[in-house]
Length: 417
Image (cartoon, rainbow, N blue to C red; front, top):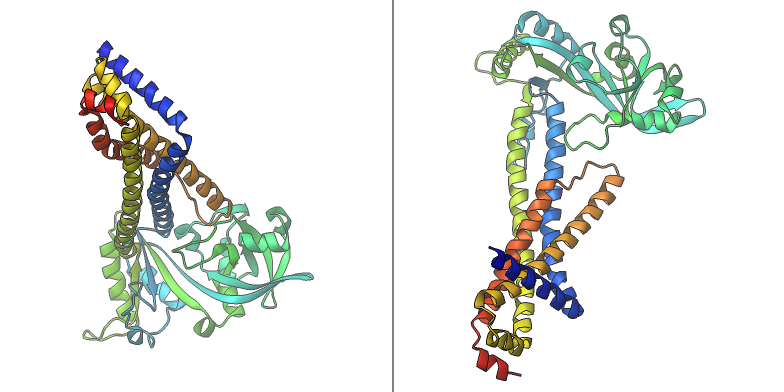
């Protein structure tokens, strides 16, 4: 055991010495494996971060929630839009039958959004904002994160009070801070609203259709006085399952009630869509499976190039040190010592390249995170994976040159130039 440790230590020391002597060769060897590890870990980090952020957004929409809308979510290149274009839009009045007859429904709400609105405060204004009008229980289904203030009280919802909640982009642009916005009166499309709440910045969303950062949220009954929801808005009903009720049970009951409300005959197709997050999750699994597969191919070829670079350098190294290898064997060095020396040199090269590749990925993550697009995370598992792959590439790329070096005849090796 002690002898083996001594062999490993001496081999490691010799490998490091050779790398320090041949700096240019070491740099060229590092370049290939650094690019390879950078490619594979950058691809994995990007896809994993994207998947994590998208899945978090999907889960925030509610796994026990059904959206009743005009359009289905299962779109694609062959989406038959002509089947749905003449469907009726969801109505606020349909909330009543749902609350009365759908026993598996815990909470339900109505909402609509309308973009391209102008928000004014004194002499300042913002163009292109979104008006988002919601009924009373919406915040209980889709929780809003407040910096300050509150959601609408019961009477404010029932009476359609002219109160508003501002998204982060709007209170930043008009007031600079959320505290300064509270209590002020703004005008949206010329209609006055008193600010009672400000929302935390959510950042760009890849899934959620509502951009809260750029929205003015108002009670539904007040929102309909600003916008004609039947012509210039995108309305929807949102229903959350009651405790103990399954999504399938909720969906079946909703379908029955909605068909009754729309007075559809038994053989007529639904003229509404019951959309759920689980359908999106299935599509996400397929999408990220393809992305990971494509990223894997790119990374594989990058590593092959890096591995060949290491192997070529190691062959040149063996050729240059042939007479030294012969001398070592002549004075008693065993085959495994020679083999270990060159293998360790190859592994050290690859590990150094791996650390450099990971360092560059870390720099990229810091740059991306500074733009606040979405969280880009270099995980510990990806770091371990990168170093493991580096070691494996080092063993594979260095084994044949190391094996050939260990098999050299000492007499022939000493005579070589």
